[in-house]
View 1: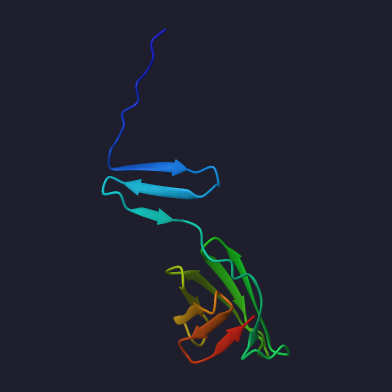
View 2 (view 1 turned 135 degrees about the vertical axis):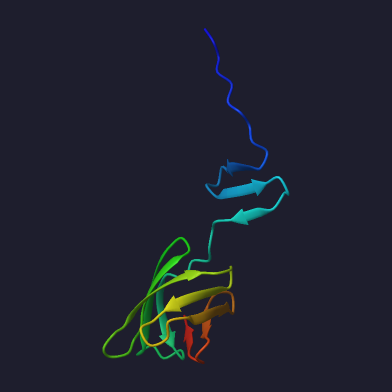
Length: 115
């Protein structure tokens, strides 16, 4: 029986840890995490529990729903562990910045969402 040897490329190797996090290690030793903060759920504009905004998350991809009437949806994605961009109809590149242990989002237009 002949065993076929597969070539090993040193440029990048993919590891899957026991915790289920995928990490890519390059020959330079850099690692890119693929886990993102969990910001799914209800958020409150200016902390007002009558103004409910909602975020649904799938990895780094986000779907946002604001509290205004009519309700508006946006698609977005994380750009780092503490920032993401949302593409609203009227604000196509609104940047959200997480703070307060991921309990506050401060938007580039000055709005603040809390949970």
